[in-house]
Every structure is written in structure tokens, then in C-alpha cells.
Image (cartoon, rainbow, N blue to C red; front, side, top):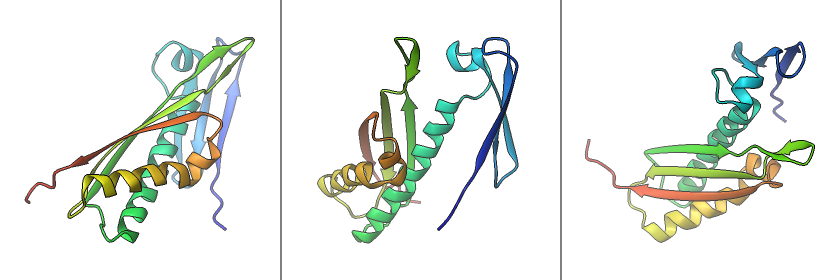
Length: 146
């Protein structure tokens, strides 16, 4: 079983404090703070990291599904938009919007859409985040001669 880790350190109170999110395997450290999370200021935030993780997992899972269906992709690019909303005294993540585009030789639109929708349900991060409404827009791009 693979185990990955991340960590975070926070200093100070919520609104004036600051922190660092660290990703274990690559030595990456990202600063985060209140303004970066709630006021569109510079810095990362947990929702952005969730979006990156979801987009990465979905892209890998879709590549696998397409390959298993006999249509290995040339390229897949996915964006995950993670919504954070105030509810009562707290916050929640009610929705995640996945947008993917893929170059896949020799596949028709219906087969591509079936693979993409199945992957939305089966990717491990989608399963983990299933408390949120997850939507998917999947676009099949024409393969450019190269």
C-alpha cells in the first residue's frame, strides 16, 4: 500500500496568522494565510491543493481507462475548481467542477464521454471527495498531426 504525506504548520490567530503547507515527497513548501484563502490574495490554500490532487488523480485514472479501452491518450489536461462556501458558523466544500480535455487517437465522442464519466466516479480522489457534488465537462480534442 502506498502512503503519501503532507503537513502544515500555522502560527498566530486565524486572520493575522500565516502558515506553510509541505508536501512530503518533493520538499515543496507553500505559504498560506487567511487573505489567500478567503480574499483572493497571494499564497496557496487547502482548496487549491485539493483541486490539484483531484485533477492529477482524475487525469491518471482517465489515461488508464482509455488505455484499457484500447485508446491510449496522447495528452490529458484537467482543471478542478473547488468551491468553498460559508454555511452557518463554518465553511464547507459543496462542489467541485472538473474540466478535462484530451487528445485521444482513434476514439469516438461517445466512447470518450463514457470513459470520462466512469472515471469521474471511480478515481480514488473522487471517491474520497464524494460528499461534494462533482461535475465533469469533458472535451475530446482533435489530434494534431505532429
